[in-house]
Length: 50
Image (cartoon, rainbow, N blue to C red):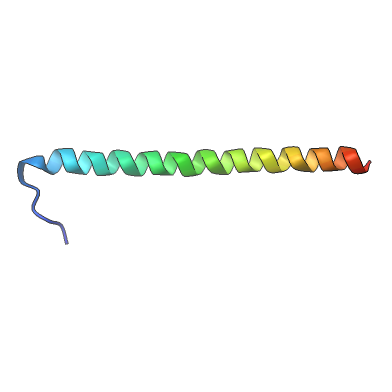
């Protein structure tokens, strides 16, 4: 169900699109950073435990 946006439709829809792209980007970057941090922690644990 889409509300009638009139002459503001393109602005509103492009803002929604930009928001979705930014949120997806943040999620991807967070996942990449999490993997890097986990790998670094595992490396430190391996060196510590010998």
